[in-house]
Length: 108
Image (cartoon, rainbow, N blue to C red; front, side, top):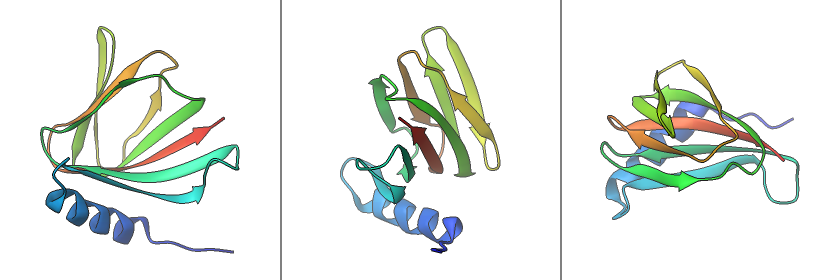
């Protein structure tokens, strides 16, 4: 069994995002392209976003720290620490309202 502290990974990724010119950083903590389940901690600095994209499969995100907005067309959902958001199968994007770290889970 492998154990990871999501709090520690989120803190590390936020630190990296704050020094990156893109204002973002991520680390896959489970799975990857060779598996059907992938979990990635994503960090965005305030005002940055993940541009609109399609979902490669069923997906959720859990906000670990900070605040974000998930936007799909005319619909939007705000998430803060502890919130679980089900990502729609339609095109969507994520905006960081403030520095944010979240766990993205995708099942292909």
